[in-house]
Image (cartoon, rainbow, N blue to C red):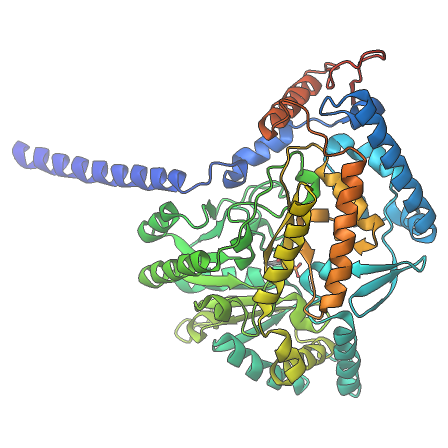
Length: 573
Ligand SMILES: Cc1ncc(COP(=O)(O)O)c(C=O)c1O
């Protein structure tokens, strides 16, 4: 009897130990699949972000935060003031109106602060008032309130794929087609039927749901994946953006932790191991834009504290990664979601699925698909899209939305889709698309190299980012030199140029000339001076020391004392 009891105890102990070891192993595997950067550690990054104190450079330090000699600092200061004066002369109306409303528009306050590293923000904001107003668009250019024309490199966050005139036409023709019905919601205008047929064909998936934004489409994909798999966790890859919903933004930027999100290393075997072994993963979200900079976040200039920005696109390697992901997800019943809100239709008419030759279980689209109006779309396999169960009538997955399938949006989308599928001129824009844009990027890089400018562009087709070849604290200034050349950038500055496909060779040459001229002016004004010992690592160490000093409430010296004047200081604000 006692022996029986002991063996039961022994057996249960062994089972518990095995379970514990398995849990431990899975935990370790999960840790191994996290990217070593802060972006790979959501909780830690939020903690660290909370420790970063605000401080900013006084005017002396601003120009010699890299200990440049006084003559270089003076050169920079002259250049800075010249540029600021030019902005003041060129954008009086737009700047004045921006200033007038900034207090009342939180979004504007946010973007005007996050254009440059915060230590430099004060002086930049005082001298370069944002000019946030535009009056018109045409071809590949934008005209501001003061009548200045700019080449559009911002691309309306990726919406502008075929040129603004194209979207104006989609909106006008679409509005014409649904005018009789007007903004009636709930029931559908007949254009919806054609949209559904086209989207099913393009995505190769069975069902479609319409939403108001890309963020909502992603939310719906994750909700449905959870509902059908009865699992909670979602996997996203380090650095990937999927909209501003909390669960896909587990780190900095989200005030509450996202406990059901695993952030794993992109393009890494350790992540596949996690997917293969865990039983709690409902879906994997892939933003194919990350192919340009796996494991790195959106490259905004406010984070450009040194020259460590890296990007490199390898189509074959990324396609191979997607194929492996596909295999593992199929094997483990995990829903593979391609979030094509940004890249959809930009890489190929059939989107990233066509471009990389890999099929997802669900695909989200948005941005350009709305034909110029706001939209989010989810396409998915029938078994994943149902919001109810026939055998359990009370077990539903609820999702509606007042403005989903708005007739005007549906009609503009229909114009977009019809042009995409049926207009030979639009189809022609896709011919040799990558070759054309790769060649343009290469040609520009050759020009930079030939004249010894420390700048290089990297691209995923028409999506470009600027990298910097020489350690510098001032790369973010490049955005102002580019703007001064009449190039319109988004608030992330040189982190992302988004070209529309209708850029002709002549348009592009004009842009390339301006980019080179901007880089030359920046070089001439001394911003890329390089002293001995100025490395990216040294820059980061110095910033860390400054932060510690500011945190401890000390005034810390940040530039080596210039020969005659008093040492510049960090001003704690
Ligand atoms: C890949 C991706 N997913 C989702 C979103 C969110 O879309 P929206 O801004 O329409 O909510 C974005 C927006 O940039 C995106 O790039």
